[in-house]
Image (cartoon, rainbow, N blue to C red):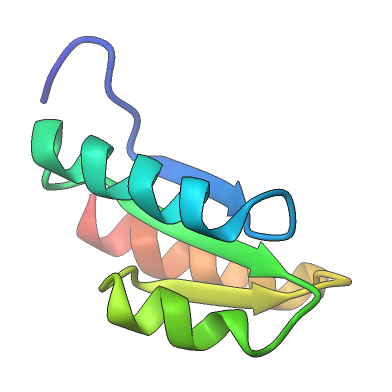
Length: 78
């Protein structure tokens, strides 16, 4: 793992969906083991997440239990 990499990125797609997707692809080029949790109030953004092959999508408002479950699932892989 690169010294400046992170295990998990939580990305807000409502800010700029395409910029977020491009950022995640850039990170994946450097750190293929990075995990992404994408959040959005627009459920249609789940399609963009799937096409970009990002693993996790949560809708806003974020359910605390769902976030914890997602983090625990990622922890098993890290």
